[in-house]
Image (cartoon, rainbow, N blue to C red):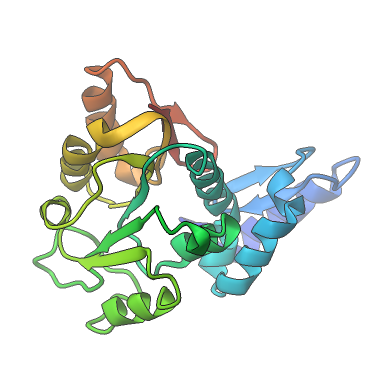
Length: 241
């Protein structure tokens, strides 16, 4: 699964040629605009993570972004040792959040909540781009996905406005995937100061050229507060509070 490919036959042929030239195919990963080899790929031997991933990732894109999902799961697992709740802005179908919940056994956390936000639908007046499963029924479908987890709260509405309706006072993990610079800065304005020391923030779009406006806005906003974002090969950005 790769984005931005013009000629699939030529592209895949080139990848296969490159793979055949390797001394060993060990540690090989291809997907999500990544081609890497000789790596440990530790998330693929994490039995608990892989069980959660295989249970909920069903489409080619969901399977292809496994390294991104593993990064989010790592950040959430770090948050389990801290005080505070989890937040994901732009949860779409809720697949990543559901994998995280299974991975960290979030249902057993009676004193901790997971807040999910999204518009869940799209029209030309909305600032985000259309996703294949945006619809008038997606909100209810996502609520149903978490029906067995009463400590997961799904809120429909535009970020940052919807954050004023319901959001936690202390945050142990924050995941932003809004595909929109203004919305992400608005979320940071409301949520960043609520992150507890040691909390991880993952910016899904940070390193992707198509969303470079977000990188520039976030570099400026966080830089003025003394933080520098770590750009990951997955295209994500990482900040430790």
